[in-house]
Each structure stands twice: as C-alpha cells, then as structure tokens.
Image (tube, rainbow, N blue to C red; front, top):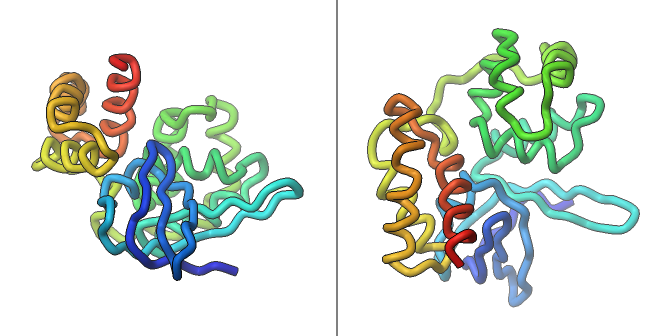
Length: 201
C-alpha cells in the first residue's frame, strides 16, 4: 500500500523516525542500522512495509528495498511477526541472514533476542529456500572495521544527544566493539550506547 516515504526527518527516537510527507508526519518503525543513517531536518527516502492488524496500522521503514524484502520474507516463517523480523534485521544485515540460513548457522539466529535453539532450528528449515543466496554487497548493517566511532557518534547526535553525551556513550561501548575482533556492527553498538545513556539519565 505504501511502498516508500520521502521527505525531511522531523523526529528521531531509539526505535522510530517521523518523516514529513506533504505536511503530514509519518511515523516509521526502524532498526538501529536504519536510524543511524538519518539526520534531523535532512531529506531521506525509506522503503516501507505496512503491517495491518485489527487494532493497528504500523509502518516499518528500511534503508533499501533489499532489507524490506528480507523483512517480509522472514514473516513467511511460522511464528515470525514484524517485531521479531525487525529484531533479526537489527542484529544482522540481509546478507548475514542469507548466509546464516544458507549455512545452517544456528548461533547467528540465537544471537537475536527472542530466538532460542529450537526456534533457530525451525527457522533454518522454513527459510532455507526463501531468502536466496548472499549477494555480497556491503549493507548498512554489515560488519565494518573502520570508522565505527564516527558513525556511532553521528547517529547519537542525530538522535538529539549532546556532543559530550555521545562521546561518553562511544567510550562506554568501546570494549564491546573491541571484543568483536575489529568488526563491530554499528547497529548493535548504537543499541548498547542508548542503554548506557538511558541508565545515566
């Protein structure tokens, strides 16, 4: 129904953004990876997927059509709703999920909050032929080895935190980033940084 939204970013929150479209603010649920690329007042274009429930209409936003497609394909598996699909994309890039399913990597799926060992095994079976092969192109949620500090700092500033708060949060999650072996995921670090900021307030 709504394929994408395009306009200036009017508001940012830890799990959502508001995009102004024709004078109307459209609230869009987003992963930390997608939110890290948004800036207040700047133009953006997000691919979207509308989830209709009896008591709600929820719009989910994605950095590109590939992420949107994976989000919708994940929900074809039994027991996977939009929240869990979004959590999977918050932890893994589309390509990382394709690789996990293609190689039967249970640990990768268990790393997602809400998925246990049995659930991971079931998902691997159900999604085996649905996600396709990894395309190999780096996505915004793919592990990166350089510049994560700058990206994380910019994302926190974009969410409205002061420069000092952003710097302290980056310092707080540095041990976690270094523990990732030089390939931290900005999306996961952003979630951890937001938790430290919430505790500090």
